[in-house]
Length: 279
Image (tube, rainbow, N blue to C red; front, side, top):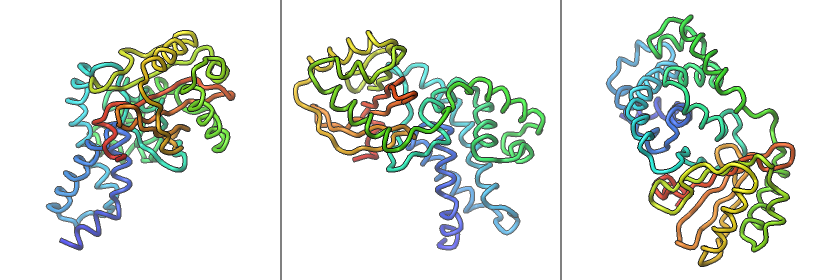
């Protein structure tokens, strides 16, 4: 069993990365990768020419099966849905949070073809084996997906230090009493996503526009019973942000989409079911 573990563990980070970007849930990704391990343990491994490709095909098929039920669950989700926050010290910009939300609008097959080809660099021949379609169909799926998500791909990377400076300024301004400093950081067309999952207070829909977002922050400030405790700066799903501990004692992540020096989107994760891995 140790040899099986070693041969699988060499590919585990890649498989987790694939499953998480397909599913948007770390716990679901872990379940899929564990199921892939069981199938690897029972496979004729001597006949597998390229273990990494073989395992990615297994994970892709398992994710496609899972997405059929996940789509139903998200249709009944309370309030805006956000993927589990992936909190890292350095930015990983291949699939940022806005792109993950755009992927949610794709069919499972479009999502698989796009991620495997455009993000992970798989050939269409290899993708065809993974999703049981011919290469030409996979090419069409990826092209269709590319058209849907093109506007959500980052136009250019935000300088790391500049992004963190804006995140720090946003933390201070959003926890203050006035709106002047906060207003200066936000774009006119800013939108605000808050995922409480029905477990903690959060906006019931995505808020759009500077005035609506400022009113929401003013209301939050009035309701706050204790100051937020800053935990750390971080990149959350590839975007500059931070982790805080709120008045209810639970963690919260905030991620900021920054373009042209202004915040164009705010993504706040409050659902405790999606924050347990940070504790």
